Length: 158
Image 1 (cartoon, rainbow, N blue to C red):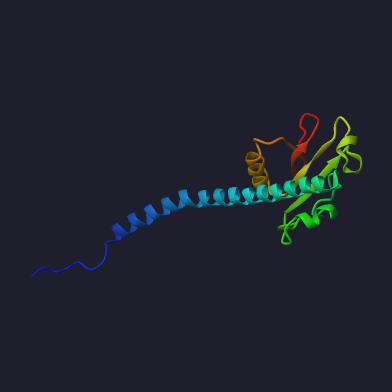
Image 2 (cartoon, one colour):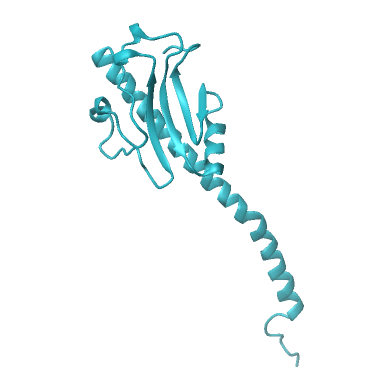
């Protein structure tokens, strides 16, 4: 009669734990990178919504919305944005609408160096870098911790 072995040897268990540990060591940083990428993609999506609202304001009133301070939705844009839209979506991130050199938002009065666009003020360095990477195909400007996606500037016009 042959005895059946029940369970695993200590060596087999140690090898299994080592392999699982190595796989976890590789996978966990990747999960963090995916989270940052997804987070930045959400911000870019929000900026797209703000951009669309600004164009709607301009189409309806022949002027662009007035500039706002970070975290504040411009009054002209409120009816063009989803009711759930917030310019402070989470701690460390706030959106801002930028409009300079365009008196009253009138494109006909724009100065040579006029700029307009929406931005995200992001305190997390890694998230800000990923946001800049995702907006690399667009005309952007960085000021401190804010990344602006310009839709009007000295070399671009909508």
